[in-house]
Amino acid sequence: MKDNFLRSKDIAIIAYGETKLERRSGKSPYELASQVAAELLGKTQLSPKDIDGFGTNATMSDCTNPFYSNFCADYLGLSPRWLQTSDLGGCSATGNVARASAAIMAGLCETVMLISADAPSTQMRPFYGGYRSEFFEPTGIQGPPGAFGLLMHRYMARHELKFEALGKLAVAQREGAVLNPNAYEKNRVPITVNDYLTARMVSSPLRLLDSVMYCDGSNGLIVTSTSRARKLGAKKMVHPIAYAEITNFDAANMTPDITETGFSVVGPEALQKAGMSPKDICMFHPYDDFLIAEMLQLEQIGFCARGEGSRFLLETDVSYRGTLPINTGGGQISAGQPGLAGGGLNLVEGVRQMFGEAGERQVKNTGNAIVTGIGVIPYGRNWGSSSVLILEA
Amino acid sequence: MNRPIRPKTSSIPKPSALTKPFWDAAKEKKLVIQYDPDSRCYQWWPRALSVKTGKMNLEWREVSGNGNLYSYTVTHVPALGFEDKVPYLVGLVELDEGVRIISNLSGITEDNAKIGMPLRVTWEKLTDDINLFSFAPRNAE
Image 1 (spheres, rainbow over the protein chains, first blue to last red):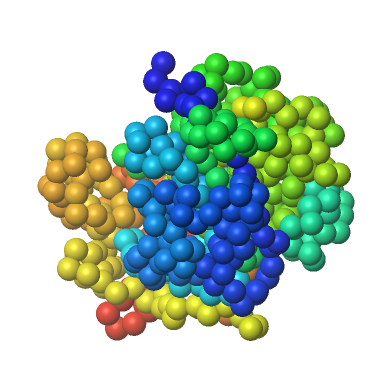
Image 2: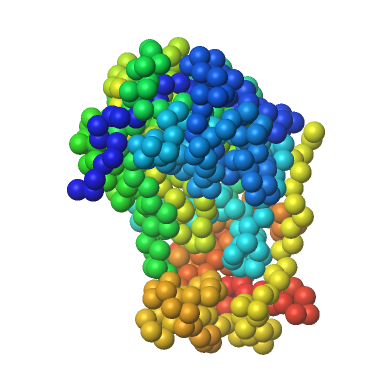
């Protein structure tokens, strides 16, 4: 078994913050991050000078800035001794919890502000080098929906995919968004399985309601040592107890099974590190750029066998009332995807639920949660990065 | 603000020194792929080193142009610059030489697309200098 530096619960998450998700807010990621920073400092009664570590995500909206985290620190009035921009896409937020934990345990810093922020519906500045402009874009493939359309058809060639199972998941998440005041307002109306089944086709067999929509928004956490959390008098805390991440799974294989993902490695590994099995998990907050990605995670983390995702979803109540609540705040698919800050959305929801502060959508069992990340669409493979973070009370 | 500000993009490939052999061959309607003689494997897309061995020992080899359809998607919401082509098919094509290539598909519709169907490379002239690969049903020729 690999060593688990988080085993002893020496690290604590003591606060979360989040903006409402908006379309075309006209705001910069710095403004959105400021709103979350103010919330985090207010909740913890910390001042900017108490923050000695800062981590954030590479954005879509300001990614041409090669000194982004430095600009954030300047904007927020911080003097961090540990500073990080993670460019793992949807794995950046969970990845930053692990990186911040390691930095705290190594003595580089003690009190870390982690903020995810992006505003892609206001400004999009990415330019991709490598193969993209010569061998990917000229084919007309429509980015992530195109890649997931390929993936879904391949899954269907191998396993039975019941669209009503994905529809049931879409409906459950939408119910969460209706009860989530921070969800994108236009999405706060219920949908039916039939709405999902008849939604506009985007990149077949992938439909509009399989997919996320870009919003502007920010979310974040305060992470510190458990001993400092106690000194600060933190009333609530959750501990990251296991983390595993892999990028470019099966790298040298030129003909990989594109339905087999990095979660087949990091899912079982994180559970093993935590000494848990899927049956022990109180709630699941998987990265949800597309519904099929959640089904693949259920299968490959080990909640059910390969090809059994449809059956599992149809047999399991995945709403906040259910036996395995999934993305109770609506997830990105129903609450909105704040660009590359999206990996923090379900993370913050997991912490909020464990703090018992989820209001009308509060789950009963808050002892632990799995939060995951997915980052980057690669060339003809499944996805770039996969991360699994396990939180425990 | 009505629409997000996006950088200008172009769907016409701009060859680099590394990729020039590929586009030079494409101009002659030949499909060439990098081959690693140490691992005896082809690899796609063009890189400066072998992903099998980590050595910078690669050569370009012409391949058969034959493959089969590993998966496909019918694009209804187009990529930028492809608005006039919807709906159009994009496939992941497995070449006989053991690499997969993302490509648009010609002569195939949603009704006759079938995973595993045999395909063969064809070429579409984008400019005087650039022929872009596409794949069509093999029995069509």
